[in-house]
Length: 349
Image (cartoon, rainbow, N blue to C red; front, side):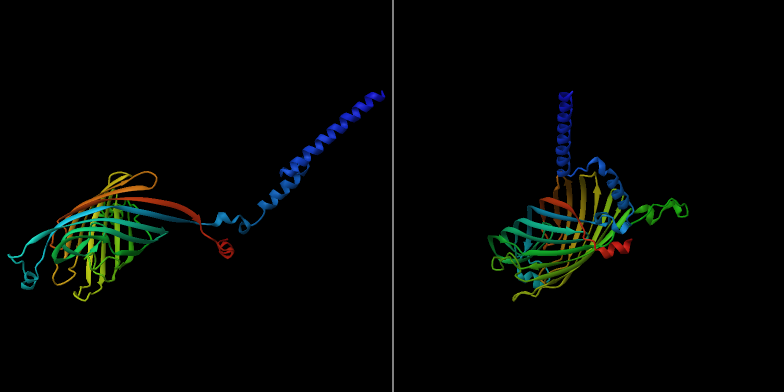
């Protein structure tokens, strides 16, 4: 009898010890014991009873979309640019003067950062030139303006640095209407899906060597506005800008207007075709206006990569006869939470 009682006492002590150890480990790991279940339920009820102003802050936050892209490629142009000051002074080409080919190869490097509707960009090319033409600007392979030198030689080096900023206005969407009030059902709402305007400015910093005829050696400033309108797979775009050019000791450059008009056809989510016409007033009394037509193909690859191909021709002596190139772009996108003030949360509540 006594031995049986002692055996039960040992079992009871062992069970008590085991329960104590288990309870201690549970509390150390953050697990509530069974007895505190009612307290947890009470806490949960009190949390649910709190007003919306006390809800977690992340529920009232908005997200900001940021984009960072890097681009590079190769552009090539070839043109016969008339030279001979006598012919310009006389108002027409002189039969005694000659046309010489000028070949320009450039490798642009571009970085662009965008946040919301704002974007900032910086671009600088490396240029290799063979021929008599002196470069004023080398853009992205589409825009090139030239003055002419009597010396034919090879030169190379960095081009001018271009800094840009752009702001996109809110998107305009046209709701579809099925009203029969319009003849043939034609209306702006039925013809177009959406439209958007943008404004921007550029500044050219003269980092190119003026002595090697790689640039004008002066600052240039530009401001522009543009828009696009979409209808199904078609995307039409236009831009109008004005450029203020810096004068050199030898040349008084003209401030000038420039414009572009084009369109794109979206083949799929990855592919699109484009065609655009570009016009820019003459930079000086001895040059002609820039007029060119460009065709393009864009291929959106995976993991933020994009490939662009372009080729075109010019229609003036200040434009390249033929030009083309390709560009590869890598884009990184991230979303981050916007900081929201407690006062803003109470105001929304």
